[in-house]
Structure formats: structure tokens, C-alpha cells
Length: 462
Image 1 (cartoon, one colour):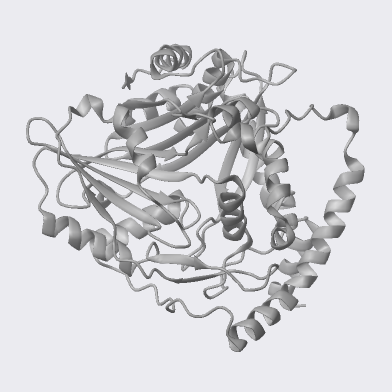
Image 2 (cartoon, rainbow, N blue to C red):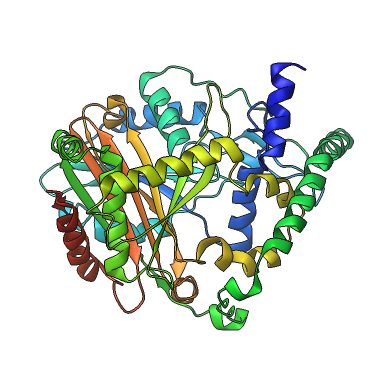
């Protein structure tokens, strides 16, 4: 038996599936699932980056950057299969690069308040544009350059790679075909063949699902909040999830971690745990569930979302006093994924057959059960990422999503942090909303500061 065959058998026994890297322009299951979620829920997570420049930006330089982005991995959109159960494909985006030019200057302190205006800018991974640049003049002659990217098209690591390619001018050509008529006989035959090829994986997923269903103990399930009737949601107000940016000296953060015998990421996970505890985002046993997306992106990977879910249940009352214990928990969780799979990837082929109504019904199980705390640890970013249009400063890399009040209440709030290092700065962005506790920036900021004090982290909170 070849090494490759042995690896395939090990992956199947572990309850996982092989990472879908060599698919050509066919969407991997994770990307198709992301697209399904967008169409079912009517909203999508969007990556939001902001750079600051002390001077006005030249229009020609911004447009050149936009054209380079369009030539790379982000210059694509989804073309749906004509078959209801067919696999969608990536095609070259048919729309020109999207750049929005603001005219009225604002104070740099007011940038957070203008985030809600970004919801009005269309971002769509099917019809395009899948990303957008926004140029905002600042009082005093400076400029803020913001970027929105559909999470269906790229996760954090894919976005970083695509932007660095656009900035350096290397590896730009995506090589994707143009959009074509999806009802053509050739397309129908091709999609049918691809669907038949996916059937064995779907059958294994059904068996895995049946086995897992029989292992669930009904007494352990939490009651699911009811869905609101459609007529009630039409007038449902949109709520802006508060965002807080935390900046600290990366060297001091690393030194503090070394003094305590852990990695700097462990300090930040302890901060997330204490923040969740102070917000009351704990389960019935008083524990905090950290949801850690683990990147399995490989060289030449064209997937938008190359992630595996990992989770760690942490005791928030002792995590800051026992940082080595927290680090051991996280490492065990990562090792368990490598050894046994994540327990979810095996079910991914079923995404081809899931109706939208079921996605809406299962939203709470995917995003609200056990009150998870999302922690995206991007690590050290290339220094080139700070200079997309000449010398600038990346001040924010966060998630942006449009929620209604009823959706946030049904999910019992949310808490998501993105952590990254660029240059000598360690940045953490906190998106948090907890009903009756923290629903505005004014109520979230003091909780963030208190959680930083719990860990002993000196930081600037804005």
C-alpha cells in the first residue's frame, strides 16, 4: 500500500475528509457551505481591514492597487451549478474593481462610528463585487483606506496572501475561466459527473451522522430559542455589534509570556476567556468554550476557507493563574484534530443536499449553542501588508457582519476576537454583544480593560 493510500485510510478512519486542495475551480465543501449560509440567512461575515495614511492618497495609486487585487485570488465570484445538488465553481469576476470615494473628512476618532455606513455598500460573492475598497479623508489631511472582503471568497490567511501578492506584484494571475451559461449541455454533463464523484463521500457522511445522532443524549441538549415569524423580522432593527481595538507592544507581550512560561497566544486566549467570564458568556457549568479555527492551508491552496474547527472548554476562574495548564489544553485540542479529525469535516459533503430552511433552523446549533467565543489567531503578518498604497499603518483587521436585534438575542449574543502581530505591534480586535450587559462600545470598553488587567497586559484600548 502506498503512503498516499495509507494516509487516505487513516483520514477516513479518523472521521475526517482529505483537505480539498486540488479541485481546479470547483468550490470546496467549506466554501459552498459558506455560500449556502449567506443565501439562507441573508447575511455574511465580511473581513474588514483599515489602514491609516498621514497624507491624501493618489487616485491612480489606489486604482492600481485595486486592479492588482482583481488579478489575484480575490478576483473571483461563485457560479452556481444548474443542479440543485451540484457543486458550484469559481469564475473570474465580471465586474470591475470596486472603489468607493468618500468626500467629507471625518476625525480619526470617528472611524469606528462610520462602520455602520459600510453595511450599505454591496458585497456579494456571486454577482460581485466580492470585495471593495473605501477611501475616507480625515481631518488634518490624512486618509483612511478600508477594505471589505466576503468571507466566502477568502478567510483571514487567504486574504493576507492575496493582498501581499497585490502589494508586491507577485503571483497575481488567478487563471479562472469567465462566467458561462450554466444551463448549457456541456455544463450539465460536467456538473452531473462531479455530483456522481461526490456521492461516496456523501454516503460516508450519512453513516457518520447516523452514528453521531445515536450517541447524543437528549438530556444534555439545551432548549433552542424559537425562530421569529418572517413578518415579525421585516421590521426588525439592525444592530451594530460594538468593536473595540486593543494595541500593545509585541515585545513586551512576548516577554510577559516568556516570564510565565507560555506562548504569547496563550496570554491572549486567557484574555478572551476572562472577557467572556466578565460578560457572563459561560455555560451552565460556568465554563467558557473557546472556538479556535485552525488553518490547514497548503502551498498553492485555492480554497477560500481552509479551516478546521477546534474547541477548548476552559475554567475562567483559574485560567489566568494557571497559564501553562491553558496552554496544555489548547495543544491537546490541536493534537487531537491532527490525530482523530475534527468530527465535523466528515459531514461536509452533505452541504450539497441541505435546504435553506434547515440552515435557518440549525443556525443556533452552529453559532449559539454553548455560547462559543471565536478566537482567530492570525499570528505574525508580513510587513508588506502595512503598505498597500505606499507607507501606511494597518490599524484594524476584524470581522464585520450585519445582525438584527432578534438574531443576536436568539444567538444569546456573540464574542469574537481577531489577534495578529504586524511589525512591533500586537493587535487584538474585539467584536462583542451580550444582551443586557454589553450592547454598545461604551459598555464594552470597561469590560475589555478589566479583562486585560486580569492577565496583566498593558495595552491601549480604542
